[in-house]
Image (cartoon, rainbow, N blue to C red; front, side):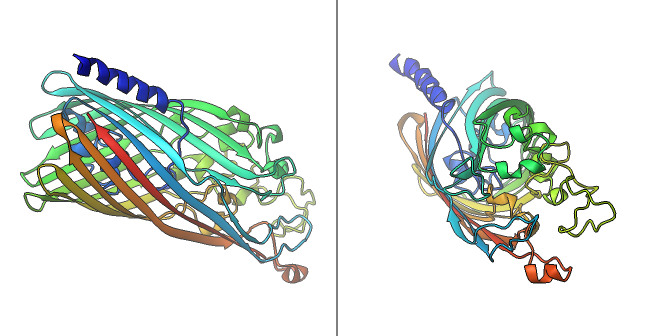
Length: 453
């Protein structure tokens, strides 16, 4: 009797904790590599296997799970820095940065997670999972962009998701699932008021504290056991349409709008032996379809204050209107210039004994940031490309289980020019070549502990 009372209470306590904690986990852009210790242990692969599904995986897999609850805690350590090479030109109408390397502070985050699954008859199930996401987080202890109103520079995006899932069996070997995705996100920016002349609303650009927004989307999934050894999984998540960050309507495109991009995942699993299973997954995230993330910085190179008709629009020293200019916060205002991310994952799981299971994986994807977009991405250096994952599970009494995962994201860099500064010698002869190079660098470590009961 005590056990029946304890379980819901523990779940409720974990839920309340989860609702009051900020999150950050930047891996595939600003999405986590995986969700839950088991899923992270295979580098986010396993979309075709139901036992990886509950935290935020394929909704079609939940009907194959028993009634259960999961809690988890991740220790996340991201390391971000940027290096500026070359002295500022000092030319009028340019924006040179201070040379040297600057490292972001705040390097350890605790991220809780929880989920529960309940059966509705023999062929359907309902589940709830709550988890965090984020990753556009930096805190540089200096005035990177010479903002006199702030002693530091940085951005923080925290996202909390609640997935409500219904899954059902079409037959013994095929199942489908649908998830209502509820989202809450908070955002704060500091240290960029210097860009006020480029904004559609300079009062809603920087240093306005925390701004919040809510939104809704959906997720669809299919899972099929096509033979005794071979399984297939498919999943699509829609764009999550979010309300605007009103306090930052002069920063993000579409007056502060910041939707969560759509994504899809496909994967297969093959049982190589009674104990060893291999997995291959492909995932794509459509960052370019969200204007505040995908719009490039280039259109804002010359603001409309440059009013010398007949001049050269490619010459930053000539006060000429740029017909392509769109200020920050406008419908097509500049963003971070992120491209879509496609990642490929391969993983293995080994059922060593009745009580022990080991797993590992590797994930590789493209960098969403191109060399032309490094200036703004000092604030959000999501340049990670390759991940190594390891994990294990220990079965306990009465169907309980303890899971551990370790993810290491290999150091990755991207470099490019500062588009707002030019070589003074060449500029004197009418040739405008960037004078500074900016390099972004990041690596990270994530360790998660999970408990299922």
